[in-house]
Image 1 (cartoon, rainbow, N blue to C red):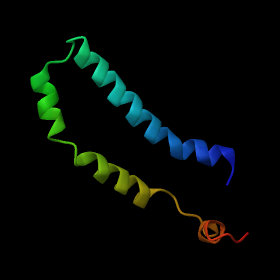
Image 2 (image 1 turned 90 degrees about the vertical axis):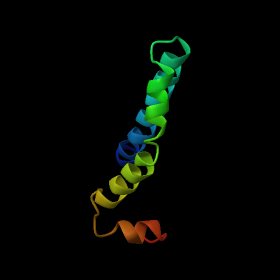
Image 3 (image 1 turned 120 degrees about the vertical axis):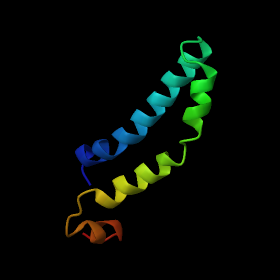
Image 4 (image 1 turned 180 degrees about the vertical axis):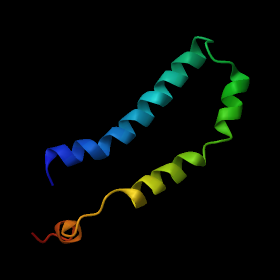
Length: 72
């Protein structure tokens, strides 16, 4: 697997971490109300759903399963 495809997979995780950090900083500096964060917290189950859908809908190529199993 090339470096380009690894970078493409990792952008989503990085974007989620950055978003969580920005929201946390905004809450610490009172730029976002605590009530809003409480409402946002109720939507946390959406995160694993989106991750699962992203995994299911990513493009599949016919040799990827052999590479994952150790074959070439």
